Amino acid sequence: MTFIKVCGLRDQASVDLAVRLGVDAVGFVFAESVRRIAVEDAAALIRSVTGPTVAVGVFKGSSVPEVIEIAAAAGLGTVQVHDVRSAEDVTRLREAGLTVIRAVVAGDSSGDFGADRLLVDGATAGAGVPWDWAGQARPDGEWILAGGLNPGNVRTAIDATGAWGVDVSSGVESSRGVKDAALIEQFVSAVRSGRDSVGHPCHGIFGVPGGKDGADTHH
Image (cartoon, rainbow, N blue to C red; front, side, top):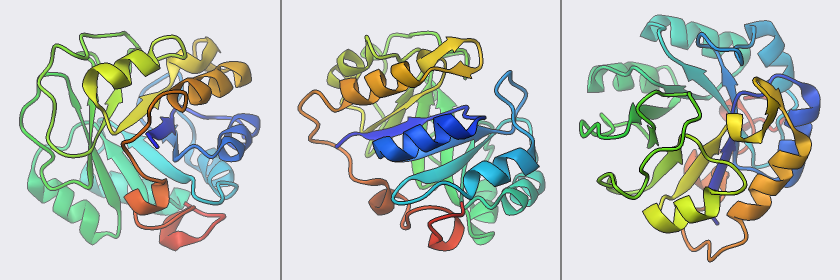
């Protein structure tokens, strides 16, 4: 099945719903954003991430040491970094025990720098604006599509790109930064409605279910 990540979560009800639906990953934003969450608040939510769902910390504008420090404080084992500058950055994060998703904008051909996964977003990362998914060169291997996805277009986007995974945030919100339970359910249903022959459960993607070190109530 196609990998699904629901990002920008800040409340217990949304986290519980995502876990109940069996999404592969939930994202917590530590970058400047209306969806930014305090480390201590994220840590409390992350402790409730159970089963195969993995919690992911999303970073932009933080140094590698800052990413490592916040990940440790929040109980994260996986990070999504939007400004990885080199393979050395990835190596330092992985040496700290972190699984790394490198996020790039469409058209960036620099590759994954040795990260565990590559996420491709629109020209303005995090803006939630649809872009020419099919018109861009597709990365090699298993990659995650982001940018302007919603319940109404995600199936078309998957079919057009062959993406291994999808990442949604604003597309499942009733207002900016406010997650909508019905839209989350509709998005997951839409992704799973087609011929989902790509992707694998999250524990096969990142190595372990739940949180950091594989604890079901951590990450």
